Length: 125
Image (cartoon, rainbow, N blue to C red; front, side):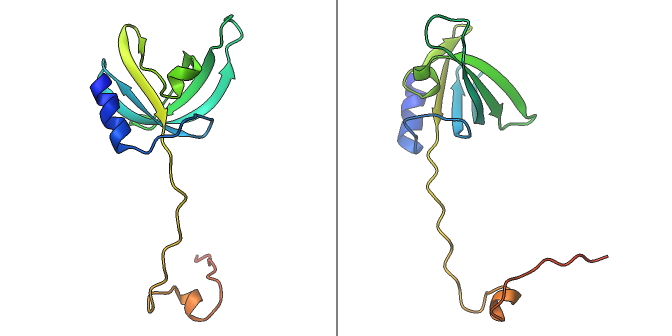
């Protein structure tokens, strides 16, 4: 598991924190999986004395699944490899760079751009 995590850290742009709305990568040893998930809610688990969180993960796989895992902060921010049912797991948020607009290529403008006005949608019956 440590070797897989080292490879992931070399090849993916990770964030240091994880918040609702982030896309994370989840790696597991058994069952063997490498899957992306969107983070839903992160809610404090009040039933525990220590700081644990109910982390909702929407797995971006087929079929789509939603799971809620109870984790500590170092576990869902990729600071540590942890186990569930005795098997290794790793979760860390991916950093996406802001997209930059593509440069305009002469002769490839949309019809609205050619005439200097915005394109509009029309309903065709």
